Image (cartoon, rainbow, N blue to C red; front, side, top):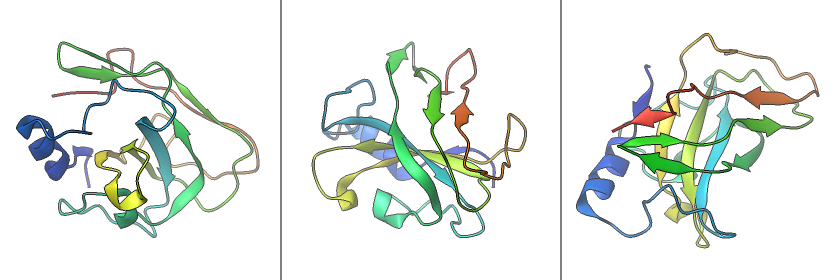
Amino acid sequence: MANAIYPIYKQNLLAGTAGYDLDNNTVADGPYLALIDTGTYTYSALHDFYNDLSGIVGTDQRLASPSVVNGTFDAADLLFTSVTGPTVEGFVIYRHNSGANTTWPLVEYYDQPGGGLPLTPNGGNITVTFNALGIFTI
């Protein structure tokens, strides 16, 4: 599977559905990143919310300093500490809110090799370094 913005996310974003913005970063709301073992999770264009995910490695992290400029979403690089578990072959960005995980929209799936993927956690830290041009552009 190539990198993809989840189609249902794009549909809701274009329709102006409340709760799909990514530059909101309050205590309860904002973009998060989950490390994924693709031996357990398989991308589907029909997936829409966090509860569709499996194979999550470590503890999800909130993206700091999210921004949207000229259609490009970006955020600060991300540090996962003391990660153990199965091999990480990808990640998923989703938008957390104060509701149940059945209401947290999936945004982007990323599984391209290179840039450190795949990696095998060894109890150390994992840094996710985003492209200087941004995470993705719509």
